Image (cartoon, rainbow, N blue to C red; front, side):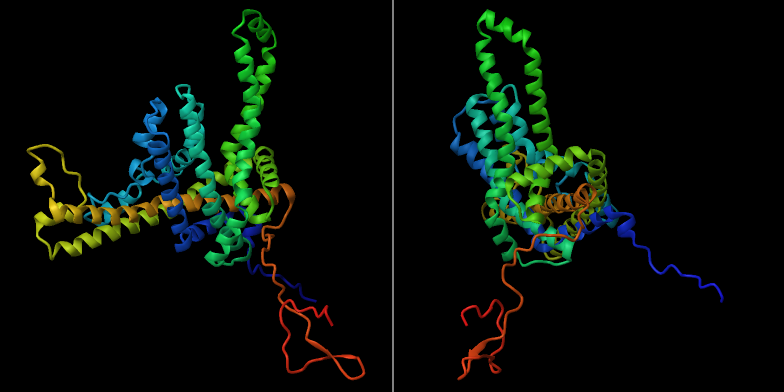
Amino acid sequence: MPDQQGKLREIAWNEICPWLILTRCVRIALLIRVLMLGTVGLIVVTAGWTVITFFVFDGIDDPVLNKWRTTGCQWVWQNSTDFTVSASQTPESAGELFKTAMAGLTEAPIELWNHLTRPFVDLFDKDLTLPGFFCLLLCGVWEIIVWGLVGGAITRIAALSLTRSEIPDLRQVIRFAWGSLVSYSLAPLMVMAAAALFAIQLVVLGLGMQWDWLALIAAVLWPLVLVYGLFMALILLGLLVGWPLMWATISVEGTDAFDAVSRSYAYTYQRPLRLIWYVFFAGLIGTFGMFVVKAFALATIGLGDWAVSFGLDQETMAQVVVQRDFPVGDGDQAAGPKGVLQTAHQVIGFWKSMLTAVAAGYQASFLWVSAVGIYLLLRRDIDAAEVDEVFDDDDEPDFGMPPLEVDEMNIPEVVVDRPAEAGDTNLDN
């Protein structure tokens, strides 16, 4: 018999390189509903920080809070040049547009990470007073609650999209996030509470060291202080790195806060090199989406200004449409718009600012989407679970028993003219 030579028809790249699933995260993060959720999350979090620092804790003279009032409560897309899509210097050519869109692509993920973790990192500032500590703690709790709802909805969309290739309804994922809000919010708070237990004991030790003999005893027993410091370092560094995995755990597994904390720490510390590789590859993929978002935002602003300029005189165009900052002073004040034109200038600036916020909103949404992808990969590596396994929150059965009726002989029979309904098990007959 002649030898039958098999032909290679297809290469299962997802089996050879499972981390290619992260390439799908860009497409999911660019969905309109996901982009809007990420943008709304950043706006609501920053607005809450402003209310807390300027109104709830108004009048408190704290150096850390003063820095927050000037920089921490500003919109991240305006405070950081890595996100800013300039509305005053729109590109005049395609080459300039692409060059501007490529600026800050690698720094943007780090900047957003610093922005989201800033309330908790600044809690350890040596210049922070006790009222400032409670202010930043309240800012952190507010952020956890907001992202518990918004980030929970995003991660649920990503979980169903990456495992089942389904795009769930927005109301469905918000309902899921709202029902699991306690678990989303409680997971990181439990970790911080555990670290606080060790810190409180060391605070008591510090109070006792005001007496000379107790200071000497504490010096002899200082290795215990180092052990407590090691425990706090393991807890807090694990939280700093693995907190997005907590949201991903709840959205994928439908579990509680305890399981989310357990899995996030296990996956972070058991496969650190895999985690670093997945984060690095996700960062490379995310920069492409960031470039697309910034390019479209720049083109939208630039083309709109270009078309309007043909019907508008140059002076009004410069004062109202082009969102440049006019210097303040007696000689320069006349150059700025006044009256109705000033209001028009501010309104146009607001709408352009909302468009530029999408750049930061994409980065936030990609953070949550990629966290789900990384979680699925780590779960596959450690627990040998299939990537397509996900919790199903649909409690309604897909089928039911046909309706039955009892005849004259007291024998049940199927009713032909009534269709079967989902959930009808005929237990009453």
